[in-house]
Image (cartoon, rainbow, N blue to C red; front, side):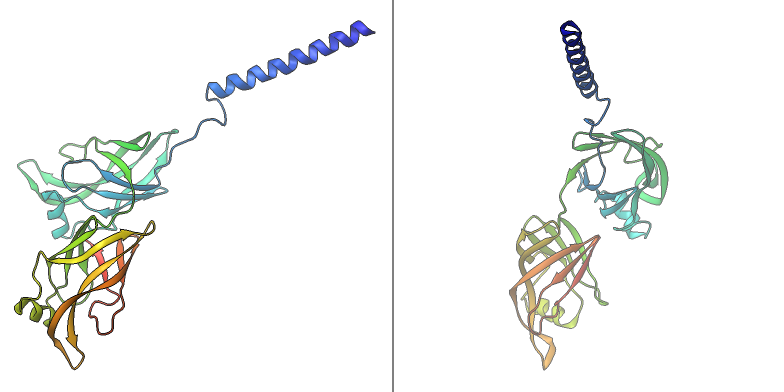
Length: 270
């Protein structure tokens, strides 16, 4: 009886050791729960020398939050072929832990005139995620983004932004903590400020911009001063504190000052 009990104990121990080895072997080979699949969700910036595309991907779709400053893409914008907020990627389907297929929107041009956009179109693409970067393996003849690489980034205000009022409005270029006028509103009071030498293109519109959250910033905004009884006559310009909230592909400026023309101004990315 003692021998029988001893053998049963040995068999039980052997079974336990065998199970432990099997579990370890499975984990090391990546055959179970130790593999963490990658995700494309997030904000991604192109790596070419120009101020490049920024794309926000969620699920099967990626949209432009910024479009390349290259001549051909800017021509496509000017011709109305594409704008921030439009899809850059669609029908993204996971084919492996680190690979996807889908369609990518590219600008069309003739090889003899590479800076002139003739339209935009969709083409099949393959995406491979390597650590924190995306390698886009897309091949189409004359496609500017063939084999494009994007790296993950955080949401940024950097870029060109157009005011949303009915007049020909401010255009502001933001880089880091500062934003400068590249175009000043055609409204009467701002034009009066220009004529009086209070402000000019190239002057700062925003300063001391500081990121306070994933989509929020604080800073100071330069506004035109005027009397409520003569709203078209500028009496100067001044700085006021502002809060900026980035909502998808637009910026909502929540700035409150009595009589400030740009209170609650909305800018969209160009």
